[in-house]
Image 1 (cartoon, rainbow, N blue to C red):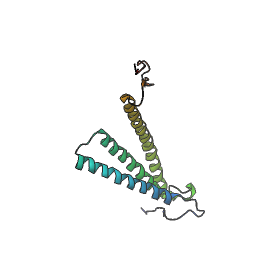
Image 2 (spheres, one colour):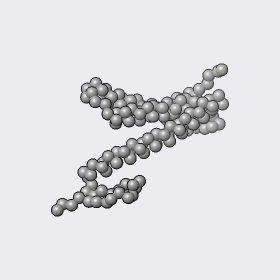
Image 3 (cartoon, rainbow, N blue to C red):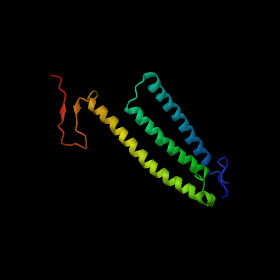
Image 4 (cartoon, one colour):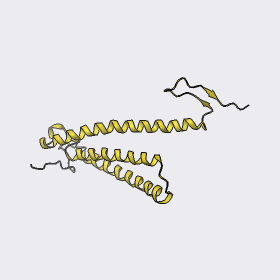
Length: 151
């Protein structure tokens, strides 16, 4: 089977090929994130010797980011950023699979980030330090409402 791929260094003739830019930004972002995650893991495991739940959540977030970046880069090499008419017919199947996997990972990642933000806000909410009043969360409206009094 002949191998065909899109040259990610050029354009499609009218300057509208965004593939090289998408590839470069996605790869650079992944490399930068990988450096920071690796530094954190080395510090937590090697220096502090205390790995907690948030470290596992960060590793999970990095894995999701890695697979998202991989599907974007693979899609870019196979025609992502080109007009449909300019995509090699041999590359369309791989590109469509990348788009499908990306959509599943994107929804999963969005849900993961939503849950993470909810957990962080819940942790801040439960500390009661910045808030003088406790207002029940939307998912538990029957909890009592109360405020600290100064007297």
